[in-house]
Image 1 (cartoon, rainbow, N blue to C red):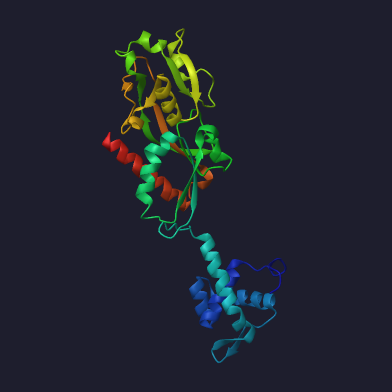
Image 2 (image 1 turned 90 degrees about the vertical axis):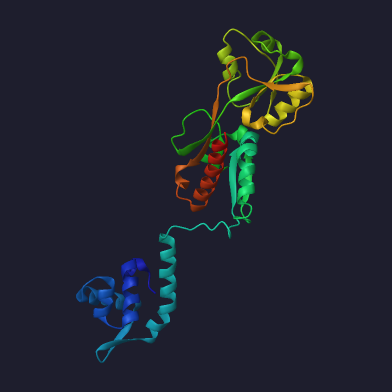
Length: 300
């Protein structure tokens, strides 16, 4: 075949050739393509020039393909089939897929949302893998730089390049030593505290609300699990998301109690890049995560 640029070949000409070789008549091929017979005749003339071959020769009232035309049929059908697949939306089959999805999250989202997700999809998507990335360090921007395909986090800020959906709204309980009970505001502030180490400013939202009062922040930990372990080992205080403690067993000397200061609630959202909004695999994954979150909300 000569170069397409030199012959003016286009997709419509390839479709016309397919119909001509299928029907062996200009009129029938024209009807199949929804054009006039004269237009189909012009297409045949262009095809003959492009391929330097008559392609179809008169035999009675019909047209018979030349040997060159017969040679073209398998390749022509393959090209058109691939173009059709290219223009059709991809279909994600979770049962057959072996795709690895990269999700930015913290240990909170892993425990509350992603562990139930894994149990839910293990049978319907046995080959699918989840690559969990430390979202506490990277944040939602991990989606923009393509480190992650999806972020399930509690970020602050606006991300004009992303779409998002709020999944959960969470409140806190205070983890404190039993020796501090009954807990008062004054007693709480006198305790040593563990807080999460994040990329946020040194003063976290709780301390901002305390105004001139100050907590003694003894340690900044990288995750909820680590912070809980430190607080329990050192007899310190830590504010823990309520859902995270539902099935937690504490040492005898520690307990959970309602906060005696204002601890802001937080939202957990799912964030993805607008460029991946139509990705059928990510659409399936987002639907599964949304389903897990809906079940959690119903049970609350």
